[in-house]
Image (cartoon, rainbow, N blue to C red; front, side, top):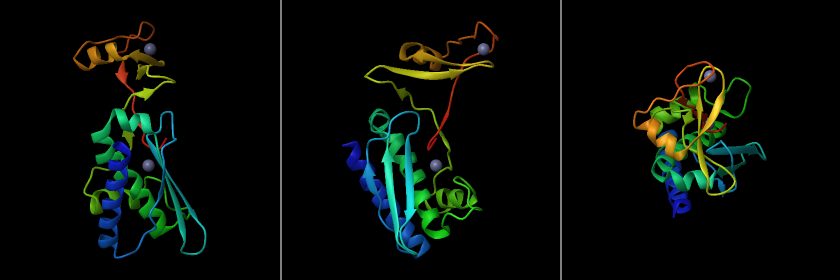
Length: 173
Ligand SMILES: [Zn+2]
Ligand SMILES: [Zn+2]
C-alpha cells in the first residue's frame, strides 16, 4: 500500500514539475531497501550528456510507520533532488539543500523546505526507540517514555541536568 502511494505521489510531483519547468525529466526507479536513520535518498547519475539515471531509495519500515507524512513531505523532498540534478546538474556550486532545491520545494511543490524528520528509527526487529538529546549526549527512549514526553512529561539528563528533547535527523542523512 505505502509503496504504491509513494510511487503514485512521485508520479504526480514529476508531472507537476514538468509542467512548471517546461522540461522533461527521467522517472526514477524505486528501491525499498534503505534502512537506518535516513528516511530516503535520491541517487542521481548522469549517463550521457542529457541521460540521467535516478534511484529513489526508501526506508520502507519508516514509510510504513509514518505513511501520511512520508508521502506528503519526504516524496516531494526527494523528487526535488531529482529536479535540481536534472536542471542544474551536479556542479560544485549546487548544494544538496541549497537555494535551487528550496525553490523547487516552495515554488514548484508549494511545500515547506523541511530538511529534518523526527520519525522513530526502527531497530533490527519490531522494537522501536526514539533518539533524544540533552547538552551532553544522545540517548534512546522507549515508545512508552516517548509518548509520555510528547504528552508533557519532562525527562532530565542526570549528568548535565538539561531537559531531553527529541532529536531530529536529516531526511537524506
Ligand atoms: Zn546530558
Ligand atoms: Zn535531501
